[in-house]
Length: 176
Image (tube, helix red, strand yellow):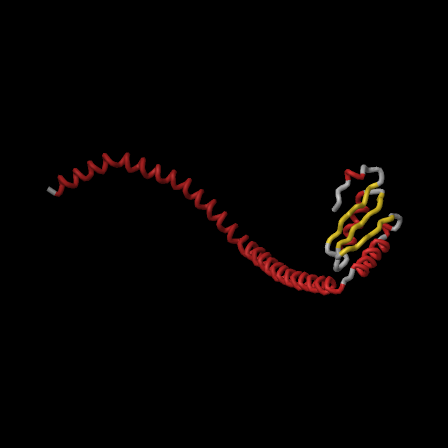
């Protein structure tokens, strides 16, 4: 009985041999592709691991620089707030003590000291801290400069411009 079983097993094995051989060859051929793929991935992994410390150092350097920049920005913002507060405080104090005649002298001084405006006749009038400028200038930029100078005087509430540009239609200029 054991011979019959051994015979059947051999016959089954012989019948399965071509299928097993094909499967083994297929597995070997797939194995070559997989092995090549694994080698390629392994090389890439090794390369990336080699580059990693330099990238980590670069990120750490950038984070340190960003932190320093944030600290400097916070410090600059604090200084800006302090300056703005002090400017407002000084303007309130000057406004409380500035009289129209004093403001007139300060505006005239600004206009006369400006090199760009030395050959231009601009007059100023001050009422209740409001400066009104008038005159004729050769270029619009000079009129704008005069307005900015008057606005820069502490205690000036606002500036109205009646400055005209030579050669332009007086109706075309708009008071500021």
